Length: 171
Image (tube, rainbow, N blue to C red; front, side, top):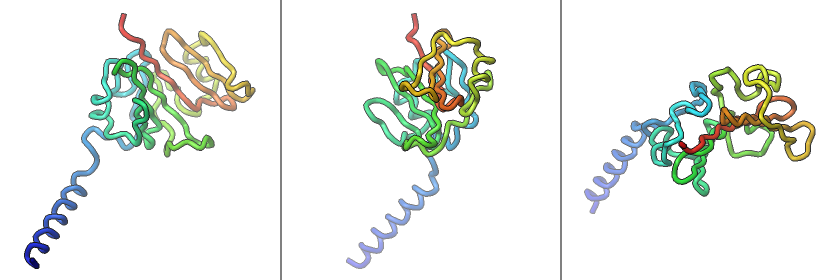
């Protein structure tokens, strides 16, 4: 009996050592700083035709999977799907919003727009938006929509706090 418990402990220690040395899941990112958004094409390595399984293979296991929305709290990124294909990628800044996200999205668009870019920076990069919306009726919040580029920028106090990338289904 004593020998058996020694073998079981040894097996457990071996399994624990393997798990620790394995590191993060293959494809898992620990930072979003290298992610570049190319409107209508990609968000880093993510593109419109990817399935949830392909996103997990690329980014690793999400922190949450709520109703088909994969959230990556350390990347400041969430991915939603329509008909089992990526539809919208949200790049967020959780500060001051009571959000479960731990870090702000650190990437940027190919035009250089990132979290904390100003409204003027967005207009300089993309021109006048297709449509603007007040955010919840508050004068400090606004959404700038760029339909052709499949982008929207949510601003609080004149600074980008969310970049939404919409992938339209192929025609």
